[in-house]
Structures are given as structure tokens and as C-alpha cells.
Amino acid sequence: MLLEGEQPARVYAQVNRLLQSDGDTAGVESAGVVTLEYPSGVVATVDCSWSHPPEHPTSGGLTMTCVGDRAIVEFDAFPQLLDGFDLAQARPRWEPGGADLDQAMLEAFLEAARTGRQAQPDGQSGLRTLQIVLAAYHSLATGQPVALRSNELCT
Image (tube, rainbow, N blue to C red; front, side, top):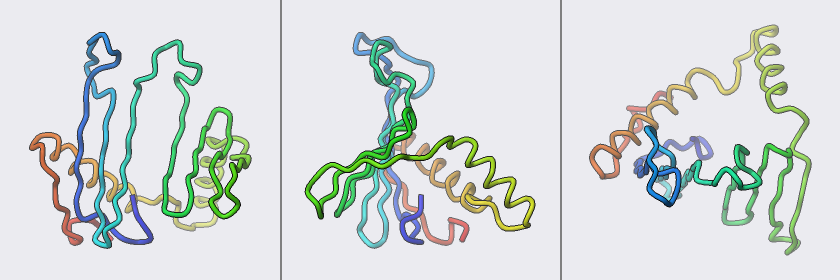
């Protein structure tokens, strides 16, 4: 995850393997929090979970919430709707999120292949993401934040 070209300096992660409050465990992580600290002092948290019960109306859905210092943006891929709160107008705001995100991703890839342009995200983005994920797993193993030096991440 990049923040205006800045690379994270520290990664901290916590997970659980509970799917339900009755204590049933899953063989894999069912909820996790990864905190990224940037040199500028910005903190980004990725909080992911499969913790909705099967009866929940959005079970299986894909949502994302971004909370910033000037806005909150919420995206739900099913239906594709961008939902947020406009601080300048002090009111909720909704925007259509697009038609078919899978189709848009495939079209962008094919266009890069046809024109020779660099596909986005590119392999370097994937490698940086992998390095952050590996640092998160190291943090899980040690229970401590893991420092990333900028020369450890590809640029």
C-alpha cells in the first residue's frame, strides 16, 4: 500500500481464527488487522474479516471503508456504489461505482498488452505488497511491529 509515493516504515499485525462467537475455529485466519506506519506519521489500518454470520444480508459481499482527515469513503462492490460523507457539504454523498470491476480490470490489462504500456498495478507493486504481507506474518510470529527499511522495499 503506497501513500502518495511514501513507503511504510513499520508493519504490525494481529489475527484470530474464530468465525463465530460460539468458539468454532477456522483452519485459517478469519479476521485480521494490519497497521502500516509511514515515515511522515500517517497510520493506515487494514481491518479485514469474515465475521458476519451467514444470515447477515451482506454475507459474501465486498466492502471497503477509507477514513481520512477530510472525508470518509465507503465502497460496496455489491451493489457497486460509492458511499461517503462530504465534510465540505456536511451531508452524505453517493456515487455510482462503475459497471463491472472484473471487466474493467481485464480491459486495462488487455489494453496494456496491446499498447506495450506498463500494466497497473505492475509487478513492482505486487512485490512491494508481498514484502508488506511477509512483514505482517513476521509481526504475527513475534507479536511486535516489524521495521521496514526503504531499501528493503523495491522502488
